[in-house]
Image (cartoon, rainbow, N blue to C red; front, side):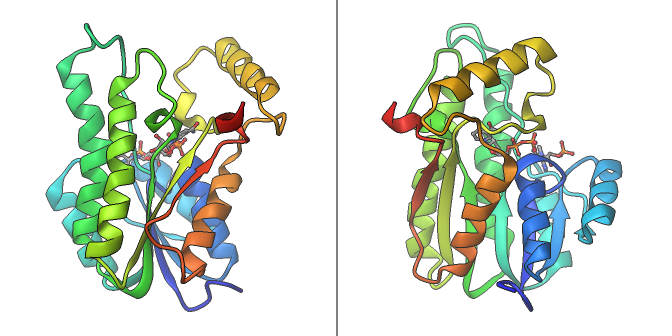
Length: 234
Ligand SMILES: NC(=O)c1ccc[n+]([C@@H]2O[C@H](COP(=O)([O-])OP(=O)(O)OC[C@H]3O[C@@H](n4cnc5c(N)ncnc54)[C@H](OP(=O)(O)O)[C@@H]3O)[C@@H](O)[C@H]2O)c1
């Protein structure tokens, strides 16, 4: 098993890409800790996959510090936590804009500062396709994702010998779109699938496998991997 004897923390591990990553790391023999805000959901998920649960909110300095104090030294850290609020550039509430950055960008920043990662271990950030393929009404997500990719490159130098990488997913079918009306969600996913060379949207495990590659390939640092079913070339 690729991760036996390794300790892995997935911040955002109770759902979607984070949950798939935690599951895969567990299957590969790692001791896995998952963290997110909703303690009931976190505990339920941790019980199913055999991980340890530590509730944490990445928008709080103290909460992230407490999380990594409880974890101690670890081998690999992954940040998938995000709650995005977008809208038309001219009218979206500044509170929503700031909230999006507070979780997705500054959340990852806090994790990178607090985590004690052993030499040769890794930190993986998750950005997203909007950094390089922007869409109307989501400028703040483009900004957060672009900044995370820059942060991954900068930290690959500053935190060495810890390795730092980012994966930028395309459309992945996860609970992140749970608030969308079901018919509209299905229609969007079907249209996206039909537009892609691979003929489908992504699943959490597609991204999880890339994240495990970052953990296990000791030559990877400062890399941004665009994992989008071929969207970049369509
Ligand atoms: N799915 C896609 O199509 C897609 C595409 C491009 C990029 N991405 C990026 O991939 C990442 C993961 O997305 P996903 O689809 O896996 O989302 P998801 O299924 O909604 O999972 C998000 C996870 O983050 C946790 N979380 C949210 N806010 C948090 C906070 N303040 N502190 C701690 N934990 C928090 C959530 O749990 P709690 O709510 O209980 O805290 C949950 O465990 C995000 O950064 C997203 O922007 C996703």
